[in-house]
Length: 84
Image (cartoon, rainbow, N blue to C red; front, side, top):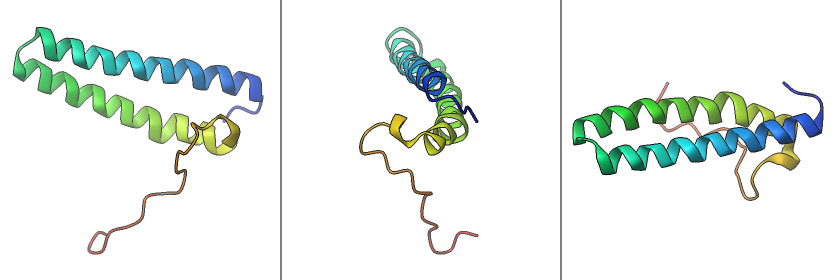
């Protein structure tokens, strides 16, 4: 994805900061908006955060394992019985 380790580190830091801001914005909406607005915002923001982790940060960290947060399990999720 990004070969240069320094650039990858900066991108990782910026994207993690973005996810923190997204998480804070969910809390803000929960405090100041209706329950319906909160649920809709949380659902959409959660999807965006999930995509960011699954398809951008995870790929970046697989290429640069030294950038992955300590203790993060980078193994693919195990398949549950009955799921195809």
